[in-house]
Amino acid sequence: MKSENVRRVVLARAGFYVLLIWPVLAGYAVAQTPFYQDKTISVVAGTDPGGTADMRIRAVVSFLRKHIPGNPTIVIEYMPGGGGRKAANHIYRTARPDGLTIGAMLSSLVPAAVVGETGVLYDIDKLIYLGTPYSGHPHIFISRRDAGLSGPEKLRSVPGLRVGAQSVGHTIYYTGRMFAYLIGMREPKFVIGYSGPELDIAFLRGEVDVRSNHPDNPIRQSLMDKGLADFHAIIEVPKGQKHLHPRYAELPDLESFAGSDRERKLISMHRTFQMAGSPFVLPLGTPKERVQILQEAMRRTFKDPEFHKEYKKTGDESAPLMPEVLEKLIKGLPREPDVVNLFKNLFGADSLPSR
Image 1 (cartoon, one colour):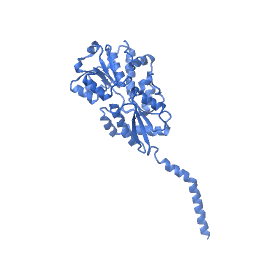
Image 2 (cartoon, helix red, strand yellow):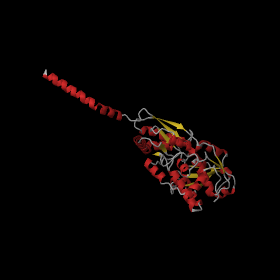
Image 3 (tube, one colour):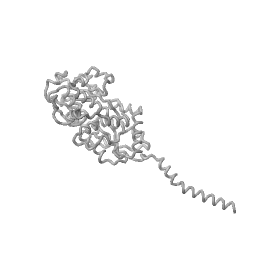
Image 4 (cartoon, rainbow, N blue to C red):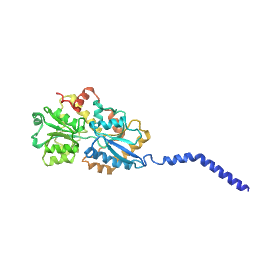
C-alpha cells in the first residue's frame, strides 16, 4: 500500500513538472519550424516580363528559394513604370514590412534618388539591402553600320541622330545621353518607349540610329560578328577592366572625351551608380530576424556555383555585391551639387546642356 502511494506521488509530481515546462517545450517546437515554411514571398519587379532584366530577376529568385529555410513559394509581380520608380515607391511606402515582400529594383534606383528625380518617394539611405547580382557593368555606344557613322567625327557632324532607349530615367537612356553629350553629338533625338527586346529589333530595322548597351549581350556580339554595327566608345565599370571585355579593348573610354574636372567626376559618379547594380531590397521596418534570414539566403545564392551558371544564360556574368558591401557603397556616394546637377540634366527629359 505504501509503495502504491509513493508511485502516485511520483506520477503527480511528474505531471506537475510537465505542465510547468510544456510552454517551453511547445515554444521550442514552434521555433524549429522555419518562419518561411508554407509562406509565399512576393518579389515586386520594376520591369516588364520577358526582357533581360526579367531574366536576371528570375535567375536570382529560382535560387533564393532554395537557400531560404522553409523553401517558401516565391512569385514575381511586375510593376513597370517611371524607370523603376513605381516599384521602388511601392516597396518604400506601401508594401507591408513583414518579410514577405521583396523589391527587385532597376539600376536607376540609386541615381534617380541622388539627383532628386520627380516622382521619387523613397530614401535610398533607409531601404534595407539584400545585395545585387551584378556590379561593374560597362556600357558601349554603337550605331548601325548602314547609317554611315564610322567614327566620332561622323557622330558630331550629323544633326538629329535618333538615340534609342526604354524610358526616361532608364540606365540605357541616361547612359546614351552621356555618350551623346561627351562625344558632342548635334541635337540628338531620344526615342523611347521600347522594352529591351523591342529596342534590339528597332535598331536592326533602322528605327533608331545609335544606342548604348551592355557589351557582352549575345545580340551585340552578333552585330559585331556580322559587321552590322560600328562601335564607338566604352565606359569601363569598374575602371581598368577592359581585359574582361577583349572584343572591345580598342574602344576609347568615354573619359577620354571629358573636357573638364566636372565631366570626369560625372563619369566617376556614373561608375559608382553602375557598381550598385540592380538591388534587391526590403521595406523599412522589416523585422530584424527576417532581414537576417533573407540577407543570408542572398549571400548563399550569390556563392552558389549553379546560380552563376544560370545567370550566365542571361548573356552576362554575375559579379554580385553582398548586402553590407552594397549598403556601404550607397552611403558613400559622392553627391557634389554641380556634378549632381549635370547628371540630373542627362537623367531627365530636357535638351542636352551646352558644354
